Length: 408
Image 1 (tube, rainbow, N blue to C red):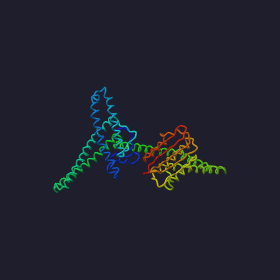
Image 2: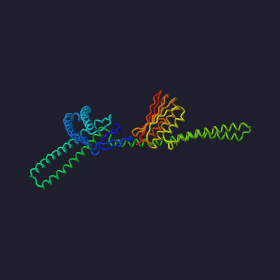
Image 3: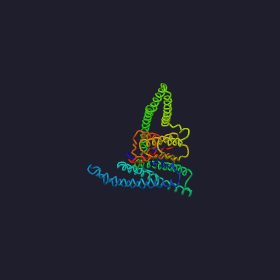
Image 4: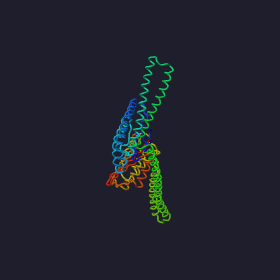
């Protein structure tokens, strides 16, 4: 089945790719009297619409049957049959939305085969419901006659016990039949108006497999960057420091050793600063000791351009979410300073309704590539937590990077 994977309301809970529950309309999920009345009205209305579907399939199907069998006119006849079927399925969709509270994907459109298959299955289920409802009504009439006979004293206790037992069994079978047919009605509606459970599960599995592969690639890329930083930065500074100390040992003049030692001391300070920067890029220790807000303040202090931070978070966040949020801000600020030519960066972190939103904006020239190594690594890190990373960076700027991280 083709279509998007947005959540819908159906007879059973469905898994949602972004971690949001999609509740069903099974009778056990809602005990409010008004909701039960609406569902009963929806079931009765479904019995009436089933007769409309049966009439349409019999009359229009009979008229268009010869044209459907003749290949030259098959396409036109099928289109005409489907057009009317879509109107009836739209009525069924409205019935389920109003009386059962179902939520279906807005832009999902079933194929012609799906529409006709749904109308046939829906008509069959509705007619069966009509039979069960008719039997239930007939049983109520018999129960009334039994009550009248009991009031007149024309029934013996043995006959009363037998009639009551049989009536109870039939009532139980009728009620269970209606519940089963209601669940069937919801399932076939879900199959036509939105993705099925199998489609959602398959999409979820595909998303998890893709995010797992992306995380592995991001970890490998991060290891290569650390190796490059150690080799091209810290290792070169250590070599230079060793050379300065060696020259200081071999120096003969009174002033040259002091100059070389001062240079070596400065090189040591630069080496410590770069080593500290590398360790912060691997994992910021401030997250463990001070929390996300202080760690982001450290990013602002070390940035090569002004960074304004707005932090609106109450309560404790999961450690994995804090780490992902930190790296989104750190990488975005670093990219803005190195590549965008920006003069100002704003960071906003907001926690609302179990969702942490991290937005980093700069006034640079734009053109950021979401498929680049840095942003793709961030996207993989966010996707591993069932989050989403949006990159809006038109040519000429500005650039806005938004990460949405569920905290449930």
